[in-house]
Figure 1 (cartoon, rainbow, N blue to C red):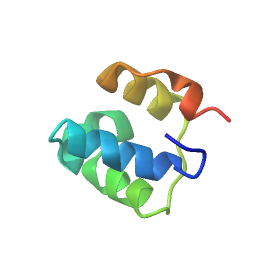
Figure 2: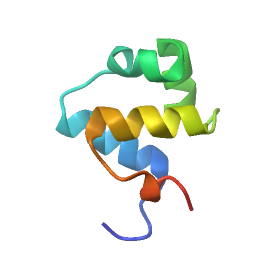
Figure 3: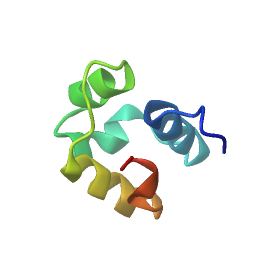
Figure 4: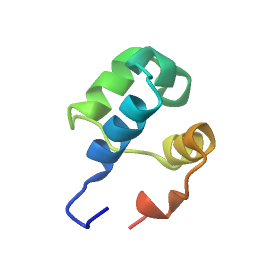
Length: 66
């Protein structure tokens, strides 16, 4: 993927690719409302979120740590 893909777009893509909904990431973000805030750009990723996403999707954390 190109450098023009931001982290929110990447998480949305991963959710779609794995047929997941916001509720499926609630355990990582501490609730579905927090997932929604993140996806709408109202909240940034923490280290805990990055680790959770890395484990959930089996991806490198490098994308999120820039």
